[in-house]
Length: 489
Ligand code: F0G
Image 1 (cartoon, rainbow, N blue to C red):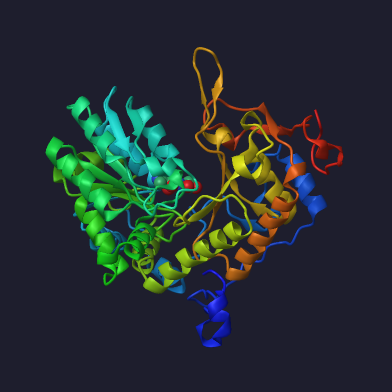
Image 2 (image 1 turned 180 degrees about the horizontal axis):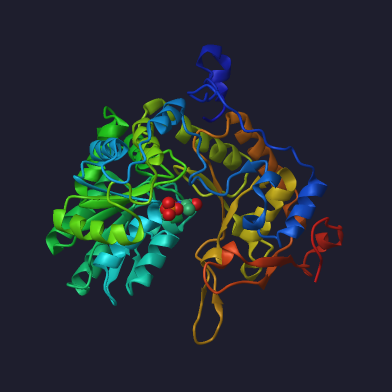
């Protein structure tokens, strides 16, 4: 929440209360408070790639919100009820009931995580040359469509390309472009996907109106409509907050309306399933479900456990109930908004408005003296770790640049972002205040920060494995200041 306004300062009773976590902490996982010199050495050992750090060397880990959340005592209790029978486990029945009650989809197919659900769905529906439109494909979604020979087409709304636009529903798809694609590619589109929230576009929500528009186009063209539902609860909450006509609805009711528009979904339970592993496919079509179950047995497991253990099925069943709790969703979204508001007030370039699961720094503006060919996002992420042991994730040209097959030239990503992804129920408000303080310190000394170059990288998904070197920026007078990390070249 933003700080007190001048008005409210005069009226003490109107001062907003601090954000509180709507839970008590029963079990703690200590982390080591490291020194800068030690972090400096860790970075060098990791080849300046944060994915290669040992997590024991990280203080606040904002690399991902996937599988990194804290389970509740009710979930741990549910784990003890897990039944590991190969076939017909009651854990599956509880899981199936929870998914049905949340999504309204009749057929429930458990998978070990989201990408396994994507793999099954696309291997079944997508044929070489098929086009699959989406607001923005997450990288595993894209990879699975391409692995099936299809073309993954991103159609984000125009507002999403401007990191400073305050438009509320920057997760939306461009409905006009979708209509054109469906017409031009008639017979060649096996399904339309919508990712809620739109992770790759800043964790921004998709409006109910936009999803209704997609539904109408899909009905008209007889194309199935699937959700990538990883963050459905956050999407439902943010939609409710920004849609006047929904102000009296619960997040659960909004989620039901969203699922009600679709024919099925893929899901990573590592996000809004509030679990450490797990996922599912769910749908209305019994014939497709039958085919998917046949494939499931070959690659994941028997249909009553898929890729999961009985205890994981029970943890997800309970997680799906807890994730729609209003107090939890309010704390989560308000806490992320709090960080964004503080950063904006300090002049730090950040993607606006606040999304559902992460804060995105605009590294191209933050380090506007570092050319995009020198990966400002990677450079900034390294500094945040060095300054305060905060691990973040570059979502810019290291991760998303495309290389021209003919010229070998690299085409930069649309944006150079650094994602601070907030695990669910894991960090407290004071951790968030610490993160804000670290970002501000790096912001103050930004002029001395140099870009990086890639030393070595694999061809596919290079951000996981690449190693980097810090560069000397000869235009930068600050360079004369000795820097503790890395070697100049
Ligand atoms: N779809 C979206 C929108 C995602 O964000 C992810 C994972 C997946 C699908 C795949 O799910 O990991 O269970 O196989 N996103 C994580 C992230 C990895 O850090 O954003 P998975």
